[in-house]
Image (cartoon, rainbow over all chains, first blue to last red; front, side, top):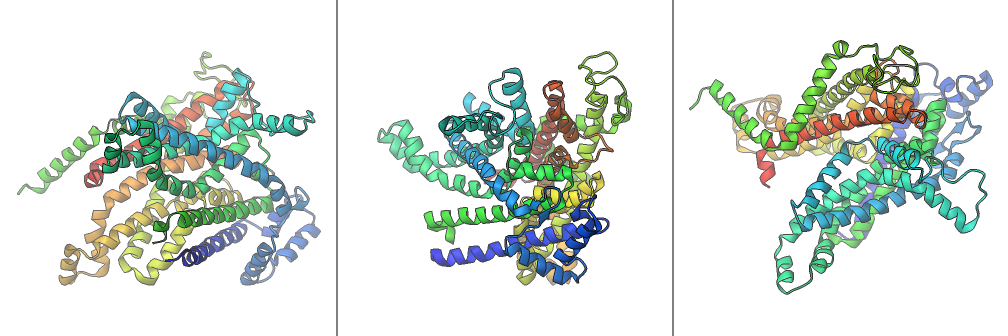
Length: 321
Length: 288
């Protein structure tokens, strides 16, 4: 299969998933006990506002018409109106999105670099003390709720040893500019990134270690060692290159869970991203906002896994079959 | 040939022999059993009603006489909350995983056995749930239908089937062409009877392992939802405890520790039990 055919096939596969997101979002509104329009407009809404919502979403029309209206709104980038914040939902999400993306990308990078590095080192001496200790730590990381890891980091590195700030994205009332501002944000970024990266790091570690163990048993590695190639080169040049495919695959598969983690992490650290927005909306009973964030992040996740899949298929033709 | 009784006893011995080789799994079983006992004996162990506020002054430190682990921001007894929280976590985890297992088995069975267009449609739907993070779906639906613990269990359960469905389907696909199935067919067995009597028993070990692992993820999802404020305030809950503790991290930092340790222990225990069951029930898989 050529790359183009694969790309078309993969794009077509993403469409049912996006449709699924829309169906879930649509029916969630109708699962509410009582009048959906009242829910969406909020408890304290005036009858006029309720009437506006009913009209705007076609809630008095047949279900099918409502759904097509809903799809049309979505295709126009209209995710509804937040009555609590008195702003369109999509505008608020776009404002916050860069902060979430920054957090997610940094966490991904940290997890990838350290996970792969530790995985290679652990696999180079299987069942050594280092291997056992890192393996047990990775296992524990799986069981820990991500948000609790964040709370522990705050406890240790913000409360007891006040090294890092416990919340926010930059110091308030500091009016920092240029490089100082960037440094200030980076300083605020450390704990949330560590929190979000931890589970992912454990996963990358496990996958790398497994793949490396398999490859280090192969003949070409023995040959390389016999030829006197240094151990560092055998590990990082010869073997790791071949072990990277499963690592890359898992990176694509984990997009969804990383964004899930981001919501909880942003909540713990009051990081002003989409996750924090979703959390405050849950508290404020801001239903259009909750729904908008759900639709937006889900479509983003579907899109991101599509893009990663296409990248690998481009890089490694074996995937296309 | 051994009689059926001896036979099952021997295989039980075999099972335990393979299970106990996995030391982490044995530890998981010990922790899991302890959690079960705590959950069942909660009314005996806990000195207070876990959700009653002001059973003492607020923010009592741990080891205050009468309040083993102190009190929280609303004057609830932390020890009682933790004990009853075990009950909530186990019920949510086990019931949700059971619902997921039931739904997943039926979908996987139908999909793998009949194949064709039925399989295509069902697998498309399954893939969809693999891509969209189920935590988000659960969050949205719970916030709309109302946050009581039964709703949460129901929704996590109804979202936990894809893993089981995919595994069951793969097994059915490979087993449906085997000789023993053809033999049953020649014998005149009905399709339903072939599915349930001939194939399903062979797939049960894999379903059991996958469902045990699902208990852990159900517990984690529930804790996350509760932490975001979607917990049921009528029951004691570890996630809710952490949510309250978050607001008072400077005044009462110790409140953060124990609920998190409890969640971690519970999820690790079920992960390890699942691992051990895998070694014991699917020994061939390990050799691969």
